[in-house]
Length: 473
Image 1 (cartoon, rainbow, N blue to C red):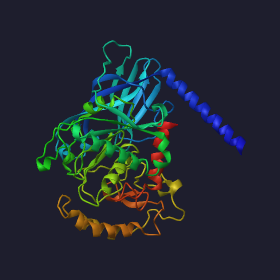
Image 2 (image 1 turned 30 degrees about the horizontal axis):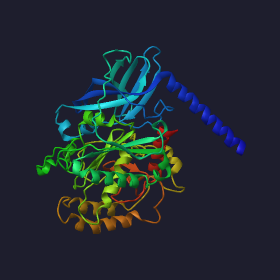
Image 3 (image 1 turned 90 degrees about the vertical axis):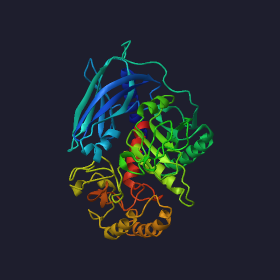
Image 4 (image 1 turned 45 degrees about the vertical axis):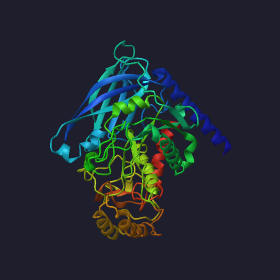
């Protein structure tokens, strides 16, 4: 047995050494940042090159150059021009693909968003392509450009990070085999910086105290940058409140009162370039419940909860949204109002690791985790839950007595989620991905499903672990 383990370790080290030699063959220890414009409307899109930048040391994986995760709406590929060999790839999602499902896009309005892809700095000319999934989940190329690292004019090499204070609040080593999380403040003035430091410390502790992050705490570094806004808070358009906040985050994104995102990608990327980062979290110095998260882009979380006894909601949201932006997890709830139209195509298997169309129960993508003897689909008290959600959905979330009226409904829903015959079991529970029928989640309850401090279900936990492994092994 010991001999087998020893051989396994030797083989793992040999594979890692070979992969690292590939990295050293193709790349320098720097980052190439490629900024693009993403333009289109419903059913149409084009991507055009904006600028290319040289940035600091490459923070990502050096051993898994071809993305093994299969996550994201888009796939960026990097080819060596001379040999046509694929030398790097990475999946991601974008602000654009979410906007494309909104009423605004469906009305034929055309918009442009600024986006960034990053990869290790190549030694030789490369072709960079971006592909998009079609409705059948097949990738089709929609953008291509050639970049020559030896060109004297193509790559901008000047320093472009603003001079804000940088602090590493969790330090477990160099970025080459760690997950480097960068936490940025928005709507925090100079006088609010102590609050930001406390919020960042608290929420990073919450994240790294939640399984499976808790068991992998030593695999994370956490950075903060003291980005000062001129005014406290962020924009709330439906209340006609407009703030001079540094990162431009706003509520009412896509028409949803609680969805808070920013379109100021260039500003964020310039600021973030001061540190090695794999993931970005933006803390919002505002009291309206809200946030958001897009895979391999960023997450946002409000931090100014004013209702006594509801402070836990910020903790819930920070971890939930990180599940989206870092783990590529889909929302497992299906009753809350969202601004998307037909986000998931009927009968098509979603790319998110925790959602399924259940077209083939015998080959369910998380079949290895299904509890023995569990029916697929898995029966649960959905009619009662739906009736409670119907009542809760009619409450005014912004009303002063909202939490008081919501509490008894949440208690009844929690009773359903605590069914002893189903708790802890993995199956296929109907209702997920914003729709009641045709999309299934792995467990009765999960951090991606209910508004509570419940943990991640086994499928979500395994998916998160795979992403951590991608950066660290």
